[in-house]
Image (cartoon, rainbow, N blue to C red; front, side, top):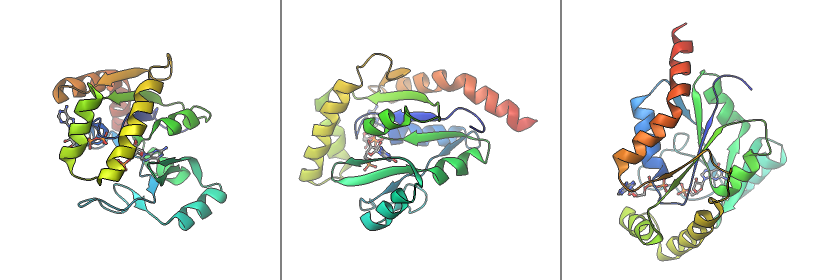
Length: 198
Ligand code: ADP
Ligand code: 5GP
């Protein structure tokens, strides 16, 4: 493995992973790089192909999976998602900390690889608050919202498994959650900043 230790952010859809990640990428622009996943879901307004995701068809994605180009992939809420080898290599080539935003199946599959990341789960204070956040985000249809809530219940249960995550952050107050995230990453941030100076 090259470069600094990657970071996995997981947790239910709507828990606040992207919000925390955007803050981190903004505050430490050169330190972190996002692993741009592939997905077969439709882009949301404002999402940019190649930046937020590589938006692809099921056929395109399956072909690349069959060619062995993915580290992990999973079916989530009716769509395929996956991390390509290229996505992680592109960040590591810049000597940046690679951040992966993946679901719990992805976490279990990454554990079988050599990647050796820091595993962090972002959890909502309650399923009711999660539902409100997802509804207020206005990105889901009623059907996809219900699928995400079902997946969220599974995630909230499975993420209690001892040792699965290095840290579980309850994202109630955003600033507090962000401080906890920064604190656990502080050592890796310092190391990366130092190595980038030399
Ligand atoms: P995820 O990436 O985990 O699916 P998002 O980052 O998109 O979740 O967050 C879901 C919604 O909740 C967004 O509209 C976001 O602005 C909001 N949100 C995130 N964190 C908080 C928080 N601590 N308090 C209130 N709303 C939040
Ligand atoms: P969304 O559609 O809200 O962007 O993402 C839905 C879920 O898919 C989230 O839990 C997110 O973490 C997960 N996800 C995004 N990219 C990947 C990926 O490459 N692999 C896996 N396993 N899950 C992903």
